[in-house]
Length: 489
Image (cartoon, rainbow, N blue to C red; front, side, top):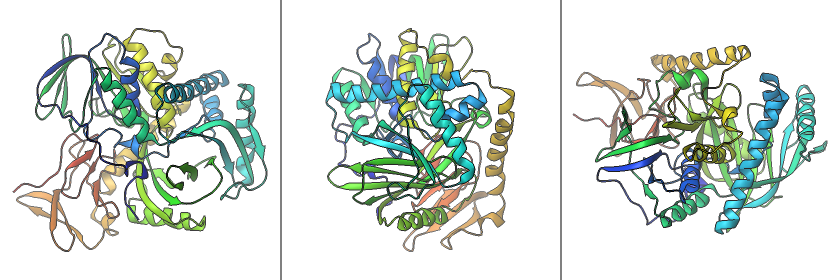
């Protein structure tokens, strides 16, 4: 069983360029996932000098660990938004998702991208009598928007269900093949893409921003933060308005109907069909707040057990993180009042393929000064309602919980015997002994000082507060941290 995403098990990219010298651009895009590449794609024919940088390789972040669903049937999101705002706001969100689906399929057709795109029927299902009325209300709301939604009272595919609804105008695809194609298309149009180029800091100047990397500086008039957790913002902005949800995913060789299914509520169970050279079932479960159930080994064992109950034998296994907003809608657009030069796209509530594409559309429209009806809907500056106060308080509490509980030694009782903690030269370090070598790291995340936990399955050090990740030797492989934790004597 490979301990990596199925999507990342591809032949290595040869066309990789790292930034080594100072440059000046009109627009700097930070992040090479679905948001960054879609934004770059829609700016490729503009007069702007645009470049994109990523700390790793294109698609190796959250976009490369998603389940790759392209659907507007998203649990009971329209019911939830209608309760938090109104049915009219829920309809706007529905229209935004339809717009994103249309954009993805149009790009694939126009550019003749080979990314295993397949039209499948999507289902939302429940196995509890208490939830049936909510799912039925979701169907009623969607039908009022003009969607064709069927209902089902019998088991579908590998999941048992009491009640389900479905839509047939939805898709699945291979997200990394799609992103690599966008990269090639944009580079052919003269747009620069720099990989393995980590931004260490962002300084505001009179005429824009200066982004600092290890080897160079990038001066830009506009900056797009297209990273999963925008780490150049004041640290208490996103912990207040969002929390991080972790999920565990497997891919198994399996032949079954081309469908996509997800539970109506948490804890999530999800399965989708994928056909490339071989056929796979992509199964996700054990979704929870990042600070809960800290033992990754236990979580991975549970997702494997869940796969086995569905007669699946995983050959790939991986973990993913998603930024969840308090009102179920993404944060896309201007961050600061009267500052159109700093934009972001994040908070996709596990629906990154549609919302990341929507972000690319909106961000490029804002840069090109074009109107778009969905800009106010997704604005990070939107006013939250009083009914969101509970979620705001909960997000702060969960961040604090992740910080505090792993500072307490008794919460490390589930650590493997090969991991221990001590002081070296007056510094707190963590040591993993693999039987041949001792791997020593500083046991504190550089982002906000949270103590790290060891992911025994993937052999990484993970932050339980904001999801930074470091390899076995402490090299930073995922933000919001910009720095590594490698121990130096």
